[in-house]
Every structure is written in structure tokens, then in C-alpha cells.
Image (cartoon, rainbow, N blue to C red; front, side):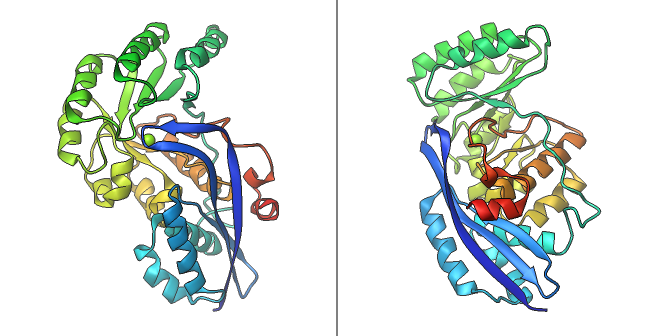
Length: 322
Ligand SMILES: [Mg+2]
């Protein structure tokens, strides 16, 4: 059976820049993927790395693959590509095979309510106050995520204290350090927070490669890995505290699908800011997570992407809008 592969570049700007201890993310760019078979069935994917250097590598591999790849060649090579290209091609093949989607017994699931990502370009307290005020009567269990590393350590220690004072008992807070602390600083924060039930976890407190340091911290409180799982994928099989899984960055989504059908405990799903094509997968994984034994709010960063057809759940509209 012949396959026909087309690509189309896309670009969008986030509605506000995302500042982390590792840099500023203001926009996303990449390629939409369309794979068609002899019967005119279509599968869709997207390839959109955070790192510009990875995009260049993906672009040159896509050129090599060309417009009429063989199925065998794609399946043989997919594991050796950068994760984002593995996602794009694997997603399209999964849909082509009716493993997922409207033609499949496994329909796309919607995402449950997301954690709220606090903006990094203003004080977290300023953002929290009106949200908590309007939630006062409903008393919904809200989850917030705050990225540290944007102010000095002293200011952030004062801010976390202030946040915990105003945060109701039923709400939760995740701290994302993006690998920005050193061991002594991380242990100091852990010693201050490990008895605090409103803290759900600290995410990637140490650099991605400091696995021994991360293990030490996780003896005291839940430590979620994010960047470490991308640089050392074998940790996905061994880290038994929380794992932040970003489906569109980590590779062939058919593997994550298999994993999550078997056991989705302590997996938390996170967006990497996708178009509507990638977002269907992130929503689906978040929906699967919610049905598992340890449901927790996914990190979908609501309100950070524009609202237009590039983010539609209909891949044809996404393709046209790119
Ligand atoms: Mg993170």
C-alpha cells in the first residue's frame, strides 16, 4: 500500500510570553503532517519542538522521507527520530489505522478541567485574588501551577508564603522550577514545604541530569519529573513519583497509549502549546488519565493560545488555517 505524506508549516504567537528559569517562550512553529493511503483515508500529526535546533533536524529528516514513504521504512526509523517528529508521524499512522478517532472504537476523549497556569509577567497574588474570590461560593477544588525562577529566591520564598496563606484548603498548588535550583536551595524549599498539604508536588526542582539529587528530594515529598523524562526517557519506566508527560514532545503516541491503557498512575498530562491537531491527543491522554487510579488536573494552560481555526478540533480546518 502506498502512502502520501504532505507537510505544511505553521506559526502562532502565545497570547502572553511564558517565562521560565530556562528562557522565554513567546511563539510556536513547526509542521502539520498529513498521511493519506490508497483508499483516501487520512491521518494527521504535528511536529513542533520547543527547541529551534530540533525543528531544523526534523525538517531535514522530513525532506529525506519525501512524499511517498513506505510504511516499513517509517516504522523502522520512528524510534530514532527526535520525539516531536516521532509524535507527528506516529499520530498520523495511528489515525490512519483507526486506532483512535471517529472511525475507531476509541473515540477522542475530552480533557477534564485543567490546572490554572499563573502568568509569569505579573505577581501570582494579583492573578490569584480575583479567581479565588469568584470561586468562594462554588468552592471548586482548583489546582494552580506557579513557575518559579522569575524573581530572587528571597522574594519567591515570601511569595509562596503569601500564596499558601490565601489558598483555600481544598485547592492545590504545583511549583515548577524547570531545573533552576541547586541541591542546597532545593532542599531548603523542600524542608519548608514537605508538611504543607496544599502543595501537590514540586516539578523538576533540579537540572534534568541530577537524578541522584532528585531521588533524594523525592524521599521527603512528591517530586514530579518533566525535563528529565525527555532527556532520559528510560526514567519513564522507573520513576515512581509523578511524571509530567508531554505527549507531543515525547515521541510516538502509540507507545503512551499502550502505557496508559495498562497503568496511568502518577502520570500527569501537560500541553506544550499545540495546534488543534496535536491538542486532540493531549486532551485524549488527559481524559484517559482522569479515568485512572490517580486522577489529577492536566496542565493545559487555558487562555495562553489564541482562539481561531488553527486550534480547531477539526484537522481540516487546522490545515487550512496554517
Ligand atoms: Mg514543567
